[in-house]
Image (cartoon, rainbow, N blue to C red):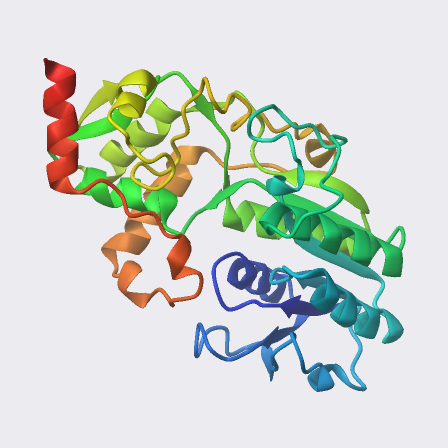
Length: 327
């Protein structure tokens, strides 16, 4: 099968392309050539900036496409129309759980209302979904991704925790250790999206792990085991972190105060699970992230979307918070 990946050189797109190659597909990557230089030499690379120049697609056709780099509805519509006219049978679009206006303040099932206007990230992703469905009705899988993790994670949320725990010592762990989280390994998401493409499974899906399966404690304890460090987890309640002005998601990745954002880890995945999405144990992902970090993976990251990486707690800030919690 001829597979086009729009993107394909950084994190999720890279895993999609690698999986497609492993399945024996003929793989083409459309990207700007700015990131991931030299990756996946077995694939064909078409260099183009899709925001203004689609000439690289002229006279070409593919059976299916996976769009991992669509953010603006006009840009997504232009590439989708070109691919549709070339005979594309199915398109998988990587959307986001941010398409749901009520989330993360409330849980969101796969039939929850989407944004209908606005120019922020979530509304724009929802508009992209509408454009693709308008152009290829019944031949689109919109995958509303949750928190994606795994090796090559350029946003560096789970890797931040693994790296911190590898350093050892007393580690500030946020909130209730029993609070469940929804993390999906990029390799599982990539494989499933290719399944959707191969079988022409259309619809809107929440692409993340089932709710209620994994706790934050299990994630961090898996990092302690994987790294073999002497890290000791000290759990600090949400209210103490909020009172101290800790910046959620930025100073402490993967943490949002549960009282304010109760829906964060409550995305419904029934349709995705019925369509075959399966997730490996989080301990396996954590161990592989550590192996990637230990082999110098962080140093090899490109700067694409580096502005979204968390700052993380400084050692001094963490120590002050731990001392305050002990009093």
